[in-house]
Image (spheres, rainbow, N blue to C red):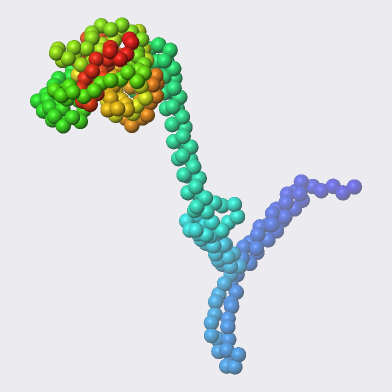
Length: 305
């Protein structure tokens, strides 16, 4: 049985530690050892070029070169069209198509949301309900509810000019010789209501006032084309239709217009919602006019209200 004393074990451990340290120093010295690389002339044996290198220099040089190549390749792929040659990477046309389709999809989503809002409001109006304003529309109405419209000198001059040129209001001609025989035409009542003020040309009332239920739909009395769909200070929301035979029908004081200028409508088609808009309105009603060849005619002679 071999017994090793504690003193011998300690000395043996010191010896092993020194051997490991010496081995490590020899390895480091080997990396730092210089080697001479020379190129000689084969005929004269003259030294043409010489370089002194160590293993550590070679490792550092190769590592730096590898890192430089990797960095350059990364930059070329990231910032030059070379990346388009990498399989699976989209080219310029593909990226433009992706962006274009994303913008179109966003526009379609907004358009669909607008149409859904419009249809929901239209259903409420048709069913006789009252629209609930929300969001920006509600804030805008709240800010502008106290606005008072006043007629300025410039506005009066503009109105006189437009009326003179017959671009909006139809002038009352003194020539009453034109024929107004509409016996062959069939007209539909614009609303189902009660006549509260009849046609009176002498008093300057060139139409018929009709009172109907709130939010009643106003329909076209005959087939025609919308020649005016606008808002004025006096008559509020106004829509005007051109019919065959130089006949015009005008619908004033509406709360909302359902057709735009240039639209073709059929007899009985909804064109507006009855209301109380305009300074000349004294309550919710429809002011309906008929004009033939620039001359106002009494609607009650041709339509049963």
